[in-house]
Image (cartoon, rainbow, N blue to C red):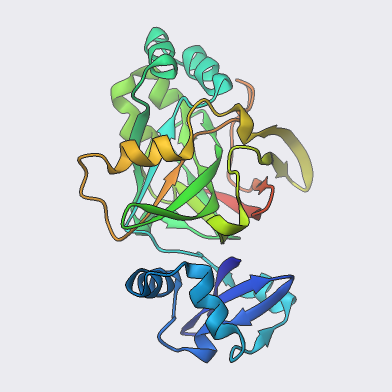
Length: 289
């Protein structure tokens, strides 16, 4: 199933989509106000999130797909968003090109231990159709489309799309500036939904594409597949949770496989759309922060 969050005035509703039909789970069970509630209830019942949601569908009213699209909110509010780096060869090459210390990225790409770093708090994360941010003190900002792993108490329960917006010139100047290049206001977007693990049997064979428009014209477009990822989702989740007190709900982004050319700079007013097979399309505007 796909799970989306709708904002209707002051109320938030969890919606499940199956076979093209949307059901308001919150209207049927007010206790299921968000995805966290569903995941927590499934954990207590020792059941899958889909099995728990299926028990509610008969009592849940249907919602028009147009209303879902217009009222869509951040599908999950994780206490932490983390990310993995240099998990695709193209990312390794791009990081080498931007960096004054390029050899370190080769070492990470080939190493047993992946690069896993903190990316965002809830206050720095936006949802579908909200603006992501680019730093005013950076001259080279890029979107980074990524498959996101949704974890409940460290266990993988679903997948989503993430945009790991980054300042390449700040990171390239010195790898120790990575937190400033990655963590700032509106630095991350997640959405448009969460797809359960049951609906994505193989996250390592999904087509992915990204386009950027400016003043209504497409200025960048590319596509790839998660089959190019050198790490597995299980491996990245294992290193994230290893010797780490992980929160109840987290999202782990798995690395970028689409890197715009060196002359590309994301600017205020641009619109970024990221599509991943089986999940959907995450669209965000851009503002300077």
